[in-house]
Image (tube, rainbow, N blue to C red; front, side):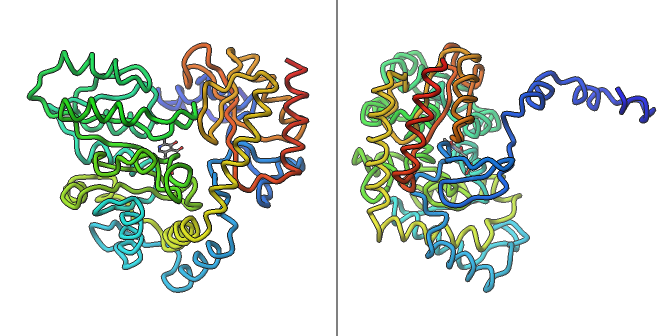
Length: 399
Ligand SMILES: Cc1ncc(COP(=O)(O)O)c(C=O)c1O
């Protein structure tokens, strides 16, 4: 109102839409998102002077403060500067990009790999880089937003099947034109639900119907499989899955993303994917931190072991408290409260007791699944768990 009074210039329709948007007004009023931490130390952050245990980070292995990761980032900054200032297809390619790609490919057991400046871009590219108009994409209903954007941009037709359900996938495939090229898009670990893909069954159907399989394993890398090689490795299906895409911003303690697969597929992707051709290459420090974290994952298996020890402990507590964790099988653990209000109060009471979590409500999750999303880290200490436990007991009592 005051702004309108002082600013006599008429608003354009789009500026007016921004001014009137109810979701933005609500978000700002309740201030649940876009919070700013003033400090961070390990699993603790400070927001508006309150010390909080971080129970919602995707840093599963807790490597972002590992001395070898920090040292690698600093050395890369000094050697290569702060950024690449160009796309890989133009002036931005550096030796360390190739090295990172070779290391990721070898780690995953794939021939080749291409890295991107964000996991979001990589996961979009894992679809748009391969599918095109006239193709059919078979998509799990609960895929990440980056994949849905990739699907839309590809111009292919899309068929959704119910979450992690190979029987529904088969039923849909039975109805489709057998000649149409098909791409199956699934995740390794579904980040909101903590479910592991029913990969063996999915692959069986995919093989029968000749689907090219693209797996977004952003949350599986570092968590599942030998030394954290991910979901395909966990099931012994690395050779069968065509594409493994992922993020460097979770277990790999950096930012950026990758797409790995057969050399011919990755060269095809490099020719066709706009997310790489027209976007600046990942920066030296980000690449170096991811490379160092990848090495730590292989040299120091204790981080993965500790992650699972912590996960079991945390889940035992949630079970004792009779909380609904949506059958999560992994360190990504939703606490389903069922409606928006209950989710909000649960979240608020955890916050009151110094625990940082994230709230997710419909339509971000299916109706009735409004939840507080939590995630375990290898870094959570005995003290952290004591605080988490007492906060959870408090929040449960207040429900
Ligand atoms: C399943 C999945 N894919 C892709 C991404 C995007 O990764 P990034 O945050 O590194 O851009 C995320 C991020 O949360 C994710 O959960």
